[in-house]
Length: 168
Image 1: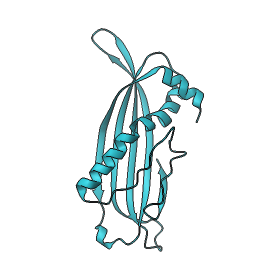
Image 2: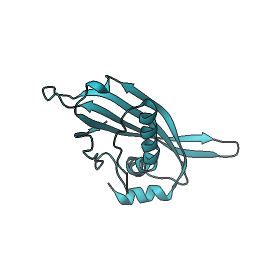
Image 3: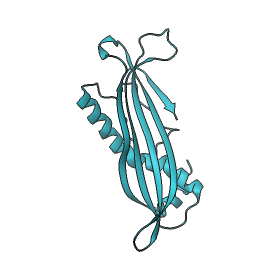
Image 4: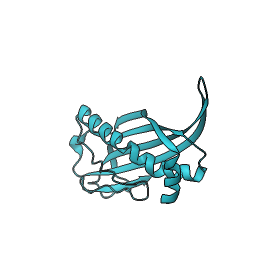
């Protein structure tokens, strides 16, 4: 993490919106057959810079897509290479930032990997808790995201007996 690049980008970006872009809940099998549950997570970040023409002026928008997922797996069968998935919850959030001035692409990418993930994290936690509750499923552990967290330092606690970090 290069904090100086993030600081340069932060000075010239203003958060305009955070929207749920797409989402899904998928069940693979019934929970009744599961003995020992584990958890896998996914985090991906993509970004683009857009020129948006309004009625009076042209604005640049820095758009970030944060792709998040949590999968609950059955880890009781140690003979399998991959644990058997039980259910997964996934969501892609779209964040739009107004570019106030020119920012190097490398600084924007660094900003997206750390600050955009930090901005979207409370929305992700709420989405997972709400979806699991509405589906009558056990709620996966979504840790607090304090300070700058991204793919490199995201850690899931071992509350469901096994955790696995998956980077996409």
